[in-house]
Amino acid sequence: MNTITTPRQGVTELELHPELAPGSDERFTGYGAMGVPYSGGHYLVLRDMLATSLGTAYRAIWHRNPAGRWTIFTTADPGVSCPRYFGSVTAVEQVPAIEVNWRDDWKIDVTMGARLSWRLALGATSATRAMTSMSGAMPQWSWNNNAVLASMGPMAGTFLGAGRIRLRGRTPNGQAFKAAPLKVWRVVGGDAQLDGIDFGAVGPLEDQTHLGDFWLPQRGLFFVGRARFSAAVEITGTRREMESVG
Image 1 (cartoon, rainbow, N blue to C red):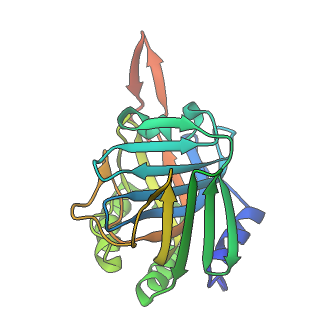
Image 2: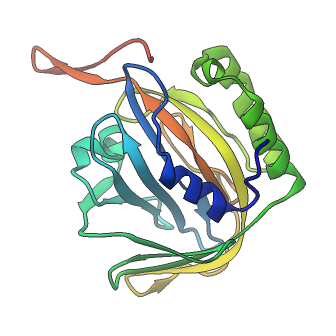
């Protein structure tokens, strides 16, 4: 029986056993803020990837400013972290450290030196509990099945009131992706300041944002889960994306 009820419990369990899904593609296991929109037009994403098939665990912050410009801050080489898949449409900056600290089972602080102060208050709803229960009941193979993911994404977006969600598609850099949010909670409050700019209240953007086929939720969500990407290879000097995933 799954006894995980709080996000801190889910993260602690993952930290003890950060296992990758089986496969030969590029795979990641971690947790973070799937996305948090702010009413003034800013948007923040947290990725703490505890295990990767590329060999380098890392943390990353994605930031979108009100003008729509994205920057990815990563603690690892961009070639083995988020910019590998999304960097063609974002600015990229490698940073020394991103710190994550829990104040209690439901509140988390994220800092990036003196530049970022980000506080998140998380909560469970009937919708997030149902999605987590359904995800836990799905067999391993289903998270690598195109038809299952294609139908599950729109259902999850509607059920969670988060706008459009796609669990499979193409990244801006061309790779195919598949996402498996195994446990989900709601972001119910908090605040953020980056480089002296206060983002204001948590609240949906006027228009939902996306990077390639990867749509960011219109309501703040926190997750524990996995992702997989097809590998990019260089052939006669031209970047070509391998056709299959997993």
